[in-house]
Length: 94
Image (tube, helix red, strand yellow):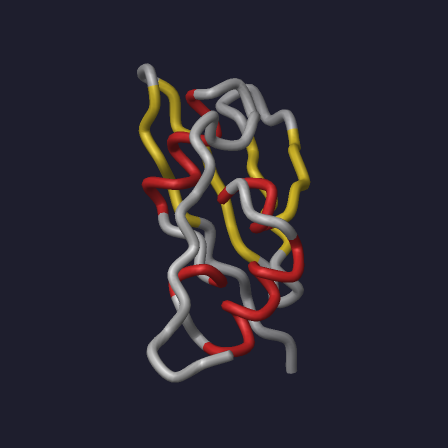
């Protein structure tokens, strides 16, 4: 039995962008015109892959992609954030 994907929608500049995060951290984004973009969660957040993967494993915000981050990514022309993302280590982790 396969699981049906639920697509999230962002309303940007009068158009509806659909996006989804897949299990491996891959993000698929469809423009209002139907153009498909495939990228990684680390690219959207502006983090290196190791930091994103570790955050995903530990369940921290470093490994999660929010709708606001996807919206910023789309508005920046599919480029990662211009400011470096601050990485905070969870208390007691090494």
